[in-house]
Image (tube, rainbow, N blue to C red; front, side, top):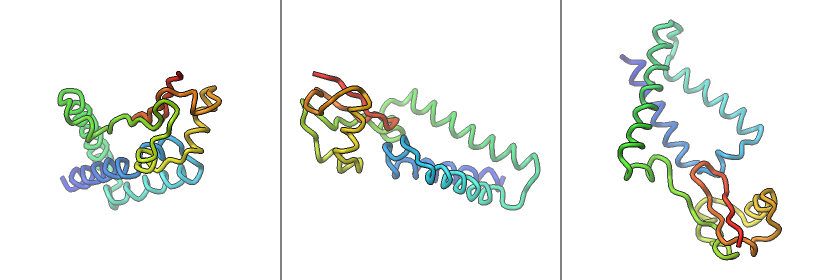
Length: 145
């Protein structure tokens, strides 16, 4: 039972971390970020299972995390007002060619990063954009004028 509680605490801690870190950072992983994820995974494993290397411990920890993920997914599906809390909401960052600085600051984005994404989407200038929306997965959607 101890492993189940530690796995649940680890799950909610990771959920909290991903909401705090921000969607943009999670969508663009650098090599250092990947290494940190591996290290974080190892640290969490040590905290969840401690020195229990049994198959039962593995099944309990993995089963708890899988059940919590399925539960959160069901809550997200059946309780619509929970979606902004669990997933976040898309945020408009450019409207009619004008950057919305307040939203960029909130998401820790620079104009240069938005322009880079626009160029990747074959858009030469932000002035050619009717809407740019930072989606909940960290990608930027551009709707040209």
